Image (cartoon, rainbow, N blue to C red; front, side, top):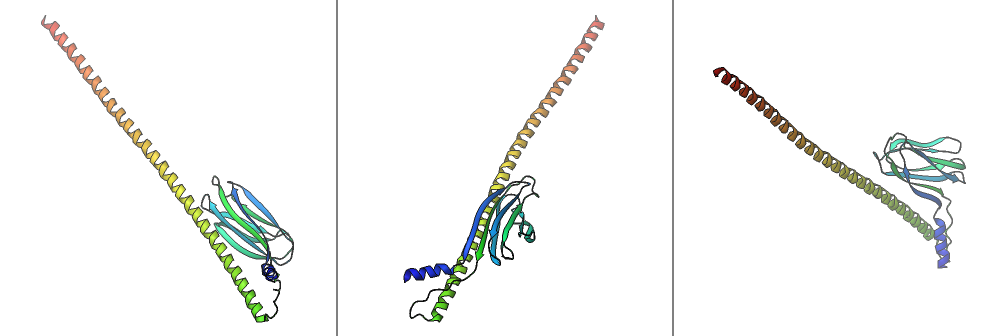
Amino acid sequence: MRFALFAGLASLVSSVTATALTYRLEANEKACFFTNVDQNNAKVAFYFAVQSGGSFDVDYSVTAPGGKIVLDGTKERQGDFVFTAQSVGEYTFCFNNEMSTFAEKMVDFEIAVENEQRAQLPSRQGASPEQTSSLEESIYKLSAQLSTVSRNQKYFRTRENRNFSTVRSTERRIFNFSVIESLMMVSMAALQVFVVRFFFQGARKVVGLESKSLLIVWHSKDEQLK
């Protein structure tokens, strides 16, 4: 009886086909992913978040089998959508990074196709319909709370990855600035040494010319006296 009850509880959970992936989207790249919907009016959940790269944004689009655009957006950091599939067939989910020249993007995304047909919970002997109904509602509330926890985990994971990427970018900029500053200091010191040596060499040449002129004048006066 307990096994039958657990089986009934499991059957209450909607049948879900989900795909969770992490994809590295190169600069100037457009990547598309596909999922097949077998039933009309099925619920399709689409979640994505840019974990790192550039300004943490990407263009996206969702296309129905007939070519109709279901969802689209530009320069979005993340999105969490649920829509009803009006037709059976292959749906296309595309990410576009053609706006970026150098930066590659790390994109986490999940595509879930859900059939929300609810099964009836097998009732035990002596259980009233009110008890069964309250148990069903408790199960669905628990499922909704678990979905909320899962979404919050995804959100905090995205925030953590973005903050870590920002810290690494800041460290890299500080290091590059320190290297440039050190090179500038060395260059300025070398330039100062060169300027000082140039002035001293110029002064020596002037002193040498003056001493030569004095010697010539002295020799000329000496010859006149003779």
